[in-house]
Length: 299
Image (cartoon, rainbow, N blue to C red; front, top):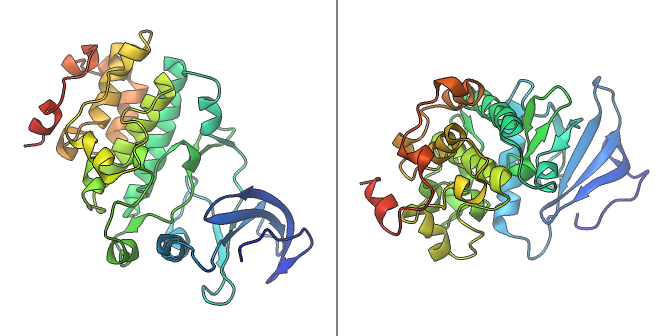
């Protein structure tokens, strides 16, 4: 189905009420139907001639993984249609704000940035405890509930320890959103939870400065630059950012996963306990180290 469906159309037992979002790979609809006790959203992929293989495989991945996840930090799964004849996923509609809304209003103040970061890290840790890795953390895929809790959405590129990694089997190039990919994802590694910590760091950097630490590369060579070129320290772009918060962001962005936080829970703790963050040269730095220095720290 490539064209948006009209309100009143039925897909299985669910009635299309309105289009919530029309993306390049799928269309989201507000729907009504058998009442599970919360508002519903239906996701229908744009399958058709010429569609990218990853969009088809990714939809199958999301069906499997979302159904296996629980807790307040992911949308509740309701049902999935047959992939060959009636592809759709019905899930909870999240009452909240997309993190992209904060980007629309310029750099985020430190206190609010730490709060949003801790909410993201808590959601990521909940996912990792369920043996899943998101692998596409970015502002568009993070919702903030009115309570302040973060909800992660769009699991089409994710990895789960209990399921085959269909994307790794099908693809021979980096998979994901280039500005937010961890260095190990660029070289084809999809099984390290610390990749999500890197992507949280990219998102925090963007919220703090209004810029992306590694730009928006469109080529493999451009994506590989993050392996050996350090980003400009965020305080060089936003001097009001405290050193302890730069320390956290730059630790998330380390090229070697071992030098990042060992878990998203450790990251959430530091974001909520700034007085306990030890500021090193990372937090005080006001310029990048130059080409090659970043890669040497990975050797």
